Image (cartoon, rainbow, N blue to C red; front, side, top):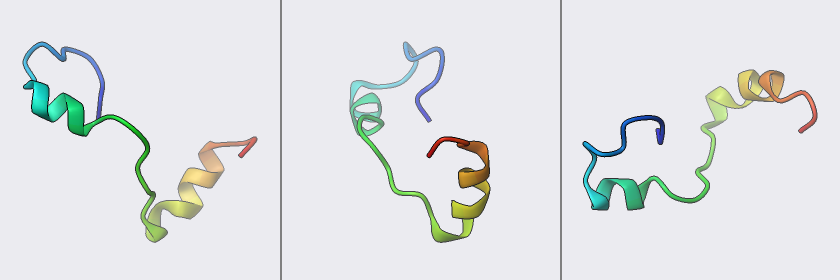
Length: 38
């Protein structure tokens, strides 16, 4: 996850955190509950 204190992370690891990622099917129900307007 891209959060705080990015100075310790390498440029390569920060670059890989960019963009959107897919949600696993087992997590889909709980994430939909967390996103009320999605």
